[in-house]
Length: 510
Image (cartoon, rainbow, N blue to C red):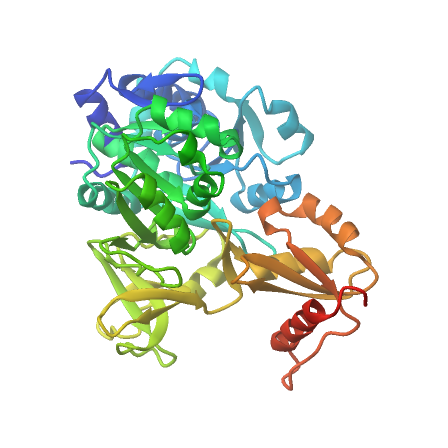
């Protein structure tokens, strides 16, 4: 009986041993080679880690990184990638949360990791990949693994200033990926061109669709998303057939007019998620690639990638919103109103999700887990955990669902879910800042920070680069003498927006 991700990997390797499983800019590996490399890493790790702990990885995405991840799984552990572009403060905070006994890096990044003085033992991936396979040790670990064991931990922004580690187990992925690949016809003949960083759950669809079906996953170098000609060359040279990308990455292609240079005509399906797809960018893609199937995917990390999909089946005009579609099999969507009642057509409610793909919760954070993963209020007979996404979705009169906004102060910016509270916490501790408030300008796609105190934009930005990823640093700063307050003693965000609007209307000579 197959119930672990390792079962799927080994079954595909037995069926297609010599087929390329993963490729990157410099190398590639067959399915048989990935299994052998992963078992070597797992054999090395069992002496350093206990089952059901988490192994941190500090490296860029690559074929070797995938073997490292699967090696951690062979050792009975979960893996968590630490983004190279995140500041040391954030990386240490994540490692403190995970209590990782081991952090794996490669020789290219060993010096940078050691300079951070991170907790845990540091191991070098190149050494692990050549370790002798210990069949007995791997068998002992495998015998006690369950499908509810954590598989990976991906971190999202947290309102308290502490990132939240979403725990996904084997069962979650093995529930979602077979449905995903069947619906979109992904087979061993496909080539998935991976865009997303490996700490971003969009990449999960690439990695595990390949493992499950035997499709080849070609890992695009991150740098190519600032070099449109190299990006197009990569897609064409590697014969990409399926893109599962963040909206922002596709908009990079259209904004840079990359398709004028070269069109990857092997593409048959383009799926996008993470933000609302602007119709003008979709139309530009359709102009160059008219025969491609376009799919709008929706869903947060906490429900294993996506919970709904919409296959674009008609023309949309600029200003219209794409529906988020229908639920994936074995997932139930509830749109709940303020009193936890199902909303009627024409009304807006919070989208909540039930099903096997719902995550285990937040790593080591019972309070936030209990707040977001709750009993279905409509089910009075048995335990049914739903995830409350915090997303407000409108049910149209014809039964389609359309994303409206966030219920709280979490936003979706540049493909990332961000808690504005985490940015506010980072700004508040800076010398010279008395109070601050952040607001997201949805129409401009920019984060606006209001600050009280003598610290100016340059001083604040310099400090934030040490504490936050670049995509979380506000795009616009405005100093105010006092923070307007509501009658309930909270910062009046509407009044702040009026101040900002008034500042934009002032003549330039003032």
